[in-house]
Length: 150
Ligand SMILES: [Zn+2]
Ligand SMILES: [Zn+2]
Image (tube, rainbow, N blue to C red; front, side, top):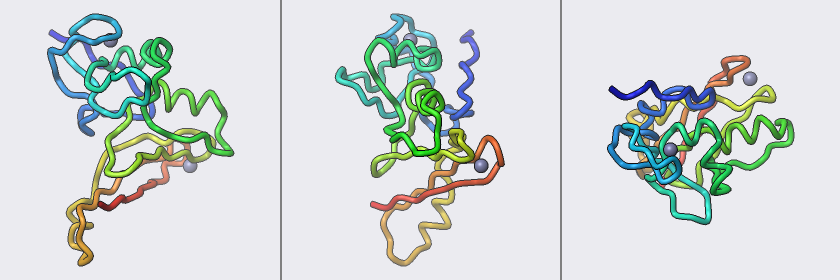
């Protein structure tokens, strides 16, 4: 039995998005193999790729110990710093073809729902391997999406 995953308010289903996968890898931060490992981007001095469990991200332990961040975001003008820190330091990021970006809306971080719409976008005649990333504002429920193209 593995314990339930921690809740990520800004990344509600990291299993569905592929940011967290079942794994017997031991987390480098807490030293436990807890059944899941985070596979998304880690921005830190140490090489922590595929070596952190989601619990160490959720409670801020990994961010604090390694000065790691996960979303690669930049502080927006209209977002309180504590919101930005919650997104950047305690939320699993996601791999993108280009630098990922996080959406902020209504003064809060948007919830990342995953890569979507690839089939529709793939029909574009100018080719490439497009993926759209979908977010939903936690305040007004507006959907926000951006596509990146190789
Ligand atoms: Zn851990
Ligand atoms: Zn909004």
